[in-house]
Amino acid sequence: MAMATAHPQPSSEVRAPARWQDFLQLLKPRVMSLVVFTAVTGLVCASRPVNPILAAVAVLCIAVGAGASAALNMWYDADIDAKMRRTRGRPVPAGRVQGADALTLGVVLSLFSVMLMGMALNWLAAGLLAFTILFYAVVYTVWLKRSTPQNIVIGGLAGALPPVIGWAAATGTTPLNAWLLCAIIFMWTPPHFWSLSLYASEDYARAGVPMMPVVAGAASTRRQILIYSLLFVPLCVAPAFTGLGGAAYLAVSALGGLVFLALAVRLARSHAGESADPRTDDHGLYGVRAGAKDARNLFAFSILYLTLLFATLLVEHIAGWRPLELVSLEAFR
Amino acid sequence: MSDPAAESDVEKKARRGRNIALALGLFLFVILVFVVTIVRLGGNVANRTF
Image 1 (cartoon, rainbow over the protein chains, first blue to last red):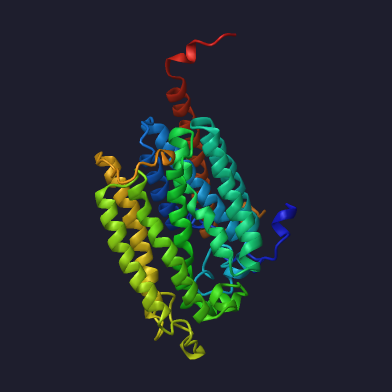
Image 2: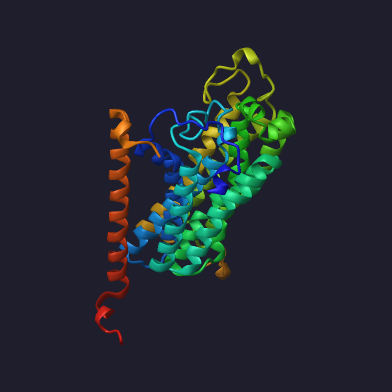
């Protein structure tokens, strides 16, 4: 397989026999669970009755598609992963799984998930799923990640699309409200990942990944996090005005948004990411170096906030609570 | 491809685990396609023209 050797692999020798759990790890199950959560929210918010078996198949296809793109990412990025503390134990850089096997798993699962989505639900959802996998594996992994500090900004589209795929699977359409959910995750990605990279920047620098703190410096990164947060929070409140969210959503998004902004302002005024000291190089990813606490706080809260937003939408739609009719925007439905 | 006869017990166990996982995956996929076909076509399975 020519492609399997096109990219340098850190380990040509397999040290331990691959167990099935190693192949499961290639699919990044934790990321997969987040994708499932947002996809289910899109599917439920579409408010169109779908056969529960077909709905489960749609979610399974999205989960497997996400896992496939993760396997393709781990195949291509094995050289980078081997240089970073956080990722050096992954199956390919650790030598437990050969690169060609990871590539094969990714390609096969991609094809199966897209074909099944098309046959079981509709081809719009299948096309969006195929686009998401290709965007993550090719545009983000192969091109953006190694070439620009805007990698996670543009690449974030792949992580933002699952609610749109879920919506399309249920209705065969993608109205503006579906894209609003996509926009929320898209705008969430830069503050989330950049606050993480502020306290893991040596890892990225060592691997030669041009993350924002490595290229533009910590101060610029903190400023950009604040700018993205100022755009992100109003976007989170918007569903309460487009017939998607109800009173509970308005409360959660507004209050959580204020906390998010406060943490972003505090981070912008801190010195997080500047105290790189090689003597403290052994701290874990979530171990906090002095001065980086503000970055970790925003990183942790960003996960909680996004989870709360989508969970509130889910609960409101499952419980049948009426969305607010503050402004009637028919075009969004 | 390694010689199965020269495999250690650990390697044999890992291979067996991989084979079982693959077999289960394929079996579930077949069941899934069958169920999806029934759900989508329902009683219309018999109403096709030849």
